Amino acid sequence: MSYFAAAVVRRTQGWSATELDLNGAADIEEVADRLRDADPDAELSLLFVESDDAYLVVLRLDEGEDLRVFGSDSTFAEESRLGALLLGEVEAPALELDDVVVEAAEDSGGDLQDESDEAPPEPDADPIGDADLLADLGIPAHRLLELCAREGMLPADVTAEVCQLVGCGDEVEELREG
Image (cartoon, rainbow, N blue to C red; front, side, top):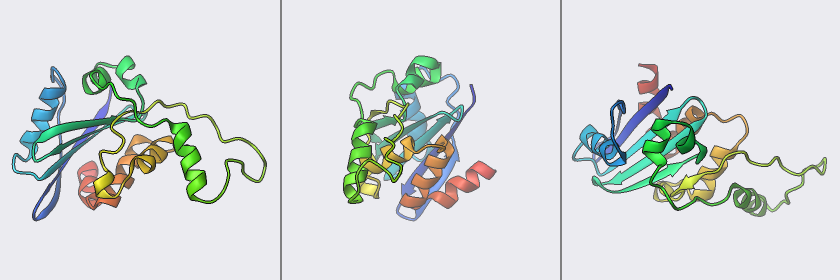
């Protein structure tokens, strides 16, 4: 299984990003410890884990405490050891993707039907966890879920867009290219 894990931390002087090695981690708390170790003095720490161009998990620590987790698809926990490690203890489901489609249509003033009167495709992902973990950074739950559900969006695309919106896009892009 291939994965990319980017730890993004914010301090008073700005954002920095570093790649994390999750091999050998025994549980989610050990992953959180590795995220804390990326910068023990960080005000905010985010970990973006992309796996097999199919799954995205976002972890968040505020001042090293209060771990919050979001996963783009609960299937990840069933299909891999890494997914089980990151999402195995997450119980609270995220908002339903169907609800996001309805909210997006209502927000745009339109309805769910397009000009061809075809219903929107059924989402094939089952997001799990705290979809609101980035709300204070300008990405409310419905926006995060919409990004994860958008057809053709890979986890790397979602990570890039989220990072651009919160202000650390250049740091993550530089890490990815390095």
